[in-house]
Image 1: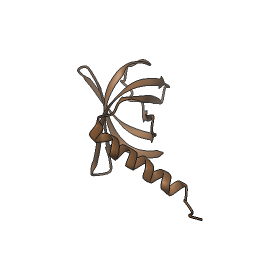
Image 2: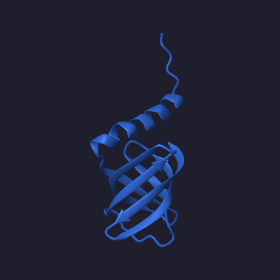
Image 3: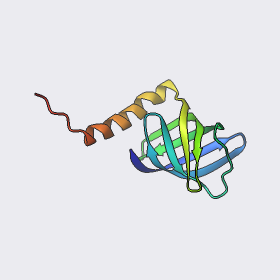
Length: 102
């Protein structure tokens, strides 16, 4: 699901602000900050601010790095954040795929 929203990526004592470009049920793609240093496999805390009411905090590992993007795979989603994340993604899928009852 393409989306433009804020994300705070933190690891140890370092943190970077960026923007989500794409979110899915397995991970998230963010714009790579100019001063970001990381490698595939690194574990990060992500605070994703979606809209005005939804803040999803989870752990994710770096899955891929390009000069413009960092792709994260979810490592641990707290139980209280699962339903809001799935609702966000499910609502998007419902808008894409119109379900017709027969």
